[in-house]
Length: 303
Image 1 (cartoon, rainbow, N blue to C red):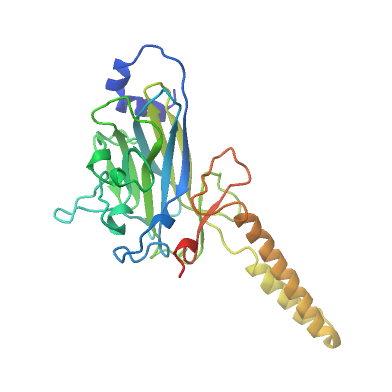
Image 2 (image 1 turned 90 degrees about the vertical axis):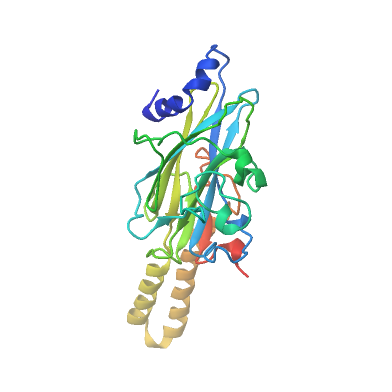
């Protein structure tokens, strides 16, 4: 058992002790889904879909098994110092609400939080009915969860343990890129490995455990993908201007421009044709590497 599985087992040790009967093996699968399209745009979180983006982690539990615990930790990207995690805070104390943030408005619903498995927009997910225990952090070995602007490290558990919870959404992570150099850039959620030309803004390891060990983990992140054809376009236009004979300059200019646009659109179509809002991603699905959630403004939030 690796370190993350060991830590997750430590979260659920009481429940596992009660159920350590050597039962049949079971599976739990994690996937990440774009959450931004579910915003109400009620004015309480003005940047949602423009500079604030959100993703949900879904847990799929084998029938007959039960979800009991989860964990999440940030892993390095280019987040510092200009990319921040957004949290809902208690209006009276200013305390970060890592569970049961509220369902009244976007400012509450889109804070980074954890819950028992529920439907993506089910009211109970955001309220005390699905609140979880937060005994310690998930990865660092500390006695308290960490919820900071540039770091998240949280372990959580069903409390009290009932062994009745099945599949659903257990994590929501929201980032604010308003102060980032990547604001206005093409933005993606992905479970794929970082590739050339793709900048990892912030990454996470999510974990889920059931009453039948072992736990499952998934690494995913928010990526910025630069426009692929900009440099090509400028280069081709310059080449056309310098080398094309004067008598055919207009035709040559048009031809090079068409080639540059074709090159640019080819990559854009490859990135977007197979994905869309709330398409569930899985690392085993090779074509669906990147789920676009913004092109300056989230497609679902454009007027």
